[in-house]
Image (tube, rainbow, N blue to C red; front, side, top):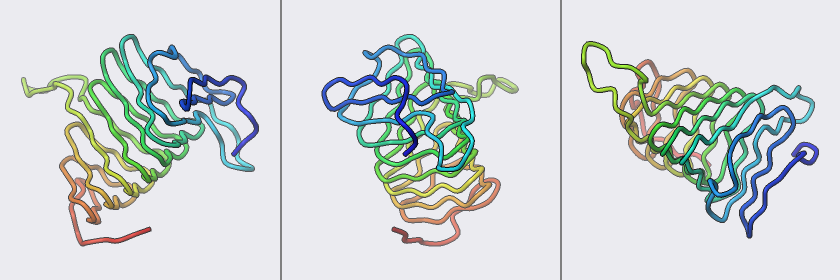
Amino acid sequence: MPKAAYLALRRGNLSIIPYRRTAMRASGSQFDGPGRVHIGANLPNSPSVAGHFILHDNAMCRLEGNFSILSGCRIDVYRGAALTLGSGYINVGGRLQCYSAITIGDGTFIGENFRAMDWDQHSIDGRDSAPQPIHIGASVWIGAGVTVLKGVTIGDGAVIGAGSIVTRDIGAHRLAVGIPAREVSDVSWR
């Protein structure tokens, strides 16, 4: 882990540790749970890239485990939305746009330049554009450059291949790849 953060919030077992070059806007009351999150940490011998973590008014972040959000990530949790983090990490350049709810389970590892958006932010031809929660299960591996769209559930133990766009649910212990992502086989990983 990189050198100590310049500012940390600790309340009981809860710890929020932002690193340099990470813009953070949230109040301590917007965090809940027994966990810890490192925000903006960078890998050894890697340059630190600016990022941000913003909890807008009435948004909540629940920390269930020890989670790391590496440098260059941009996390926005909008008014009234909830982000829940288990244990694991999001590698450099990740982007979360949470308008409703995004949950990331325990032991989940997410590659660089990941995107998750639980709302389209607009409608096309009158189609429903309401936010829909995203649920990423426990022990999931998501490759680099993956995008997960609104309303998707990724089951426990699933693996999502690099560059995939996940537009529908992926079952537990399934390998999914492609645009749009399709389940191609069973998978087991540790």
